[in-house]
Amino acid sequence: MLSYRHLFHAGNFADVHKHAVLSLLLQELARKDTPYCYLDSHAGAGRYDLASPEAGKNAEHRGGIDLLWRRDDLPAALRPYLEAVRSLNPEAGERPRWYPGSPRLARGFLRPQDRMVLTELHPEDAARLREEFAHDRQVAVHHLDGYHGLKAFVPPKERRGLLLMDPAYERRDELRHLIVGLAGAKAHWTQGVFALWFPITHRTALEDFYRRLEKTGIPKILVSELCVRAPKTARLNGSVMAVINPPWQFEQRLGECVPWLASVLGEKASGSERCRWLVPE
Image (cartoon, rainbow, N blue to C red; front, side):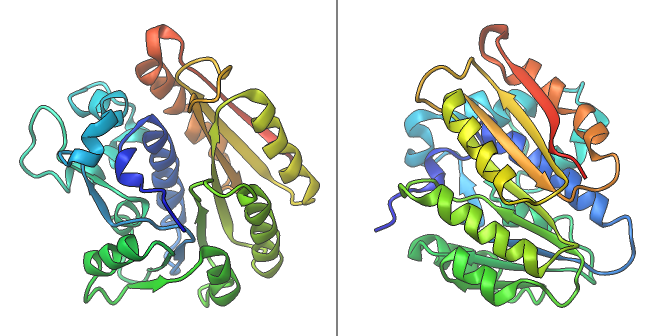
């Protein structure tokens, strides 16, 4: 039985990191006129109410999107991301009321020729996702296990596009499913861009994640790490976005904004970031 609900964590520092990188990737895909497809294997709900009791339980957004909301010194690379969040909050206050899930964020970057395919297994979140994109002909929502969806929808007919894999990691064997699903999808869609999110708790788990990625034999894996505190305990200390087959010079794009995020989101000046090629071309 699925128990994870992202509403309790929406808008936290990991969301900011993940969505900043996602926004950059989608902007790069739009540089060519030909259509692309955005696929999200663990899509969640369309948007999250930060004023809800669930979001307010730990108020993780206070250490994430709230810290960016009133800033006027954002790097240019981050502005499209923040504008996408602001589009859900036309009545701008001291902090945002609504935070977009990855599908809602991505929808703001689609052009008329592009489309999205979303899969979500949790029945309540899948229902909300369907409601969020009701009557939107560019969006297909499926109440389905994301790993089964990879077999059904990869490769997309457009051949160009991006797959985001962002599971809840609540199952003991989740990482194995993630790596197997990735390897299968990459074998069928060699030119696709893949983005994997992974939580940083302590370095042992992170190094295991990296070892498993390397063992797939997949080339061109760029990793962006952001930590708000030293990864020494079992709590969520940081966030990783592993990007496979990234756009040309994408590491430079990350360098324009992730170091700034680390300085703003880090607790007690302990924020850090690292961008490196885990596997070169």
